[in-house]
Image 1 (cartoon, rainbow, N blue to C red):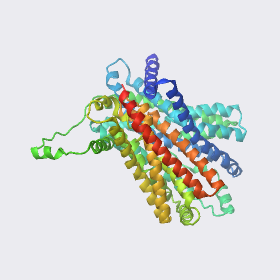
Image 2: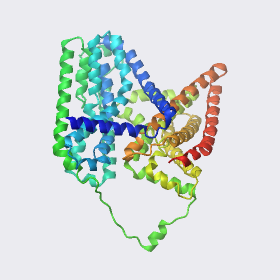
Image 3: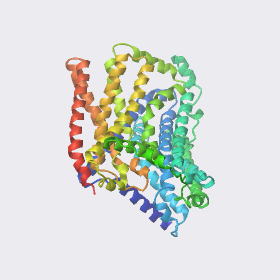
Image 4: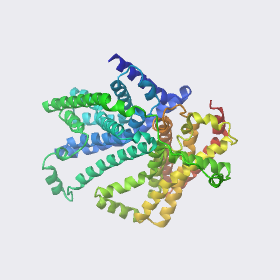
Length: 551
């Protein structure tokens, strides 16, 4: 047990060092903490407001379990989707695995230590649901037992989703030779996790849409049939124990459920402990080996490979190839470009076509054009800041960044290539959203205006993302996964984006109240263009010097 504790501390210190290694000085650390807090607050506030709004109606219908149950199920789904790729990287493709195996350490200690490190990361993400859980307790008038149980629920909530991914990776790595095809394996498992998570979402939506709520009588009839939460199914079986432990914290049912929750978690951890000795060690041995295909090229083929291009185009091609050829970048950067498809398609798959019909009527109606432009720009800002292409542009170079210092290319060219690639790839998201407006029968002028507004937002955020990553790049990482997923610069960029959205809203409201909505939109557009000019000058004058000084 002492070795397990020491190993866990080592993994945690290594994890924290990886997060903060790129932060130089107190100023950057403070700015990073503020950016993370702003991001967490921006997520926590709407969740908390929603919990407050739906509490009374659902309590009156005797469906209070549905509030926390839905919240916990959604949180578990998010943990599973975003944790699956991290599991593979940390357990199998991390550089410390090879030199840990020969040491007198049990495989089970390695697994549990890495598992606890993953949980620590998930706790940071799940912090955004804490205010909602506390708000539920305040509104419901819960006693001290509720808050004590809440601590247990919070600590155990991510364990089952992470355990699913861990066990899945154990089985795949033990009984297949996918480890010899690391790149394909990471991509397949990553997308498998996304598909499974989204499938859960679709099933839950179909269950909800199966109820007829056309009038109050129908609603009363539905909720009068008993607890909807009891009839809901979820693969995260700790969700029901957690929900009833809190909603019934003042009764014996709450005590029973908190006991069952602890028991289930203990069994899961025991299973992981045992599987580590039987499956993990056999799946991880020889993991550093990989297959390769050798091909002898003819003289003509060699000549065809040599093509002359401008330095900027060459660097842009290199950037695109690195993004597309690296599985972690495909999953964490490229796949997020199609987030609008997920947002638009899933409601249709879930049978919410009636609601979408109302959206179509709204978008195609007159008098809402400027509102659509404003909302479109805000949504685009979120999507672009989330794809991490710009905010990890320098970090993805890793230790190879020192090689670029000796190449006959200016730092300005290198930075501009990264910015242009980020803009071009992010424009895919813009194009998808614009096509969405066409499908929703928006006016063609509104579609064009929205697309242009999206490009303005994309340009500004991509430039700022590259600047942020240039000043504090995360160059020390053991796997590409850490370069993007554990990179605080992504959170910084999202925090700056949120600040831009807030300022834009203030300018829009001020202009609208003073004269008209058109003036408000015009002021925001001018402010964003000015921001692009200023950020571009910072990029070519300041960021290039900063990149030159990186050691």
